[in-house]
Picture 1: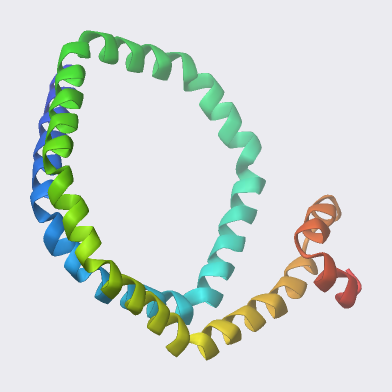
Picture 2 (picture 1 turned 30 degrees about the vertical axis):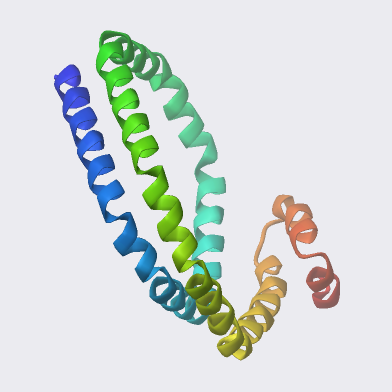
Length: 176
């Protein structure tokens, strides 16, 4: 079953590589719009992203002993399965790599000329997006700094040294 999955994955990767190479001119032309949208979304979502990251990191740290035990127990089987699958599929993996490399080399002139032609538009879009969103970016930074001091307060004693290293000025101001 695993060799069939590897063959399917290799075929999928080859198809994706060919499709990606042919789509590069369209993607490059859309880069300014994509960057503008991403910056707008990220700027407005920074506080939520930071809070979600803190929550996720805290949960991971608390579950670390269980995670390590589970991974350690399963590691021999995982390694054996990966090695066996890779060894039995070396010819397909090498052929997929060669196909991908050849396709990229053949498309390199088109990729370079397309990116070069779109570079002024990309730079203009990045700069204008950053300039037009400067107040929101500054506000998000201020909110992030305000949240950092509140982050250390609910932590247990073993976590406080790490928090103080991550947020040295805010920890000192908040008395944590």
